Amino acid sequence: MDYDGYIKTYNEGDDVVTAQQYYTEDITLTMPLGTLSGRDEVIGFLTRGHAGIPEELKPRIVLRSEDHILAELDIVLRPERDVPDHFLTPLVTGQEATARFFASYDLRGDRIAAFRLAWWPPA
Figure 1 (cartoon, helix red, strand yellow):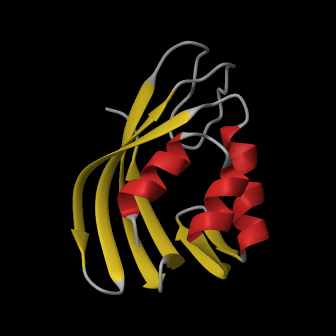
Figure 2 (spheres, one colour):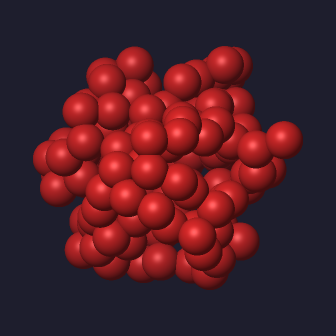
């Protein structure tokens, strides 16, 4: 799997393109907010989460094997609207916020079949 290409595509902000290119149809996403099943459910979650909140992933450490990727990433949020109840931290229009994420990806061929996320809010 081309993880660098995945990050580039993800950062371009089109969740449908990212999902169709890099996620299996039966993908699962597990995180502290719950578990999502299937590409359409993941797309819906990402699309809602990114509405008015452009996001950039900045990998810090990436470890790869044939079927897995482990990554420590910074996630940079650049809110275009106030989101006082955002799950990471209250967001204020124009005020960038950065949080740390850990991601564990299970691969099937050149696609992500499952991933698990953990995160820490901005300090």
